[in-house]
Image 1: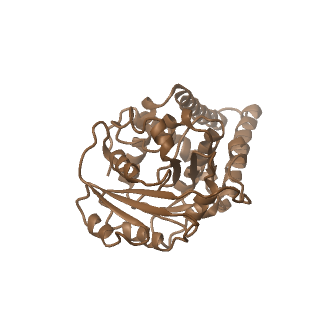
Image 2 (image 1 turned 60 degrees about the horizontal axis):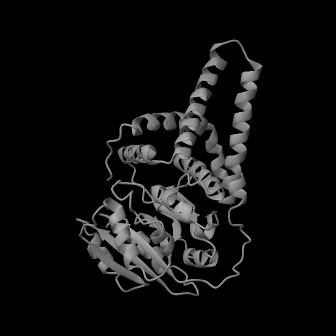
Image 3 (image 1 turned 180 degrees about the vertical axis):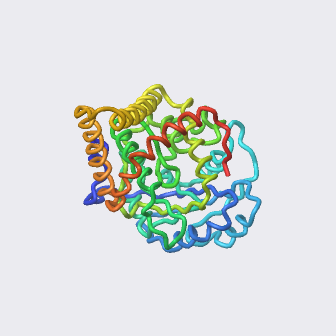
Length: 346
């Protein structure tokens, strides 16, 4: 709760001189999804400062280069065709490193090629990134089609992770992040040594990097305001989601001790929950056990609804009831499966 209460207030106003912004997008074989992102870029309201949008094609073999090239020089877009290698840095991180090196400004904003930006996204960033702020995380919603409802279990699950991320930022202990909508300073990235030490890991350009940068951050904050919220579009592919979850869980071995302890505690918490449910239904009614389960349910529902209210998505709260059984099982499964590794990126 403390982390959510410390998030940027919906009534916050600008009281500093805005800084110019470099937006960086890494795109690998995203020719089909890029037009939607590019169209949303064309509709961005211009902030009172200069900005640039750097789109790095990461060894693309489809029509990605042609799609971006048609927009090069328009709406602040700069196209970089990255076909090289960076020693010690692999995968998406190498493409991001290329974009960061090319960026003209200190404030770096990141999104993904399969996302769409709200019209006031740049304005919200310029208003929020004051001189004392080094890192800012924004909210995102998952869709599979333009006309689809956001009433999806994955969005309730993401809300849980964002609430955890907010708590971590408020207490100076990075827990998780999201590459599709976060902002940090180039000077912070360089101060923390960039991707040194984590560049060889295929994933982790968001959370592992935040963990690495955290000791160097003056102030980090979660901004749930609607003007910063992006929409992301994922394929209707259970296989892709399966490998994505494995990829996330496989980073456990790279986490600092405090985050490993937290992960183990959550793992045991969910195991105990299932054991309590089994005992409740298979043995004589235990009022103390029932009270503990009801207290757990009430507290989780309250916290999740508090966060959903911040992002104007209270209607997702109804998904808590199926998720209360599915999410713990999923967490336990991927915690075990992720320790084995072996996943596909795309």
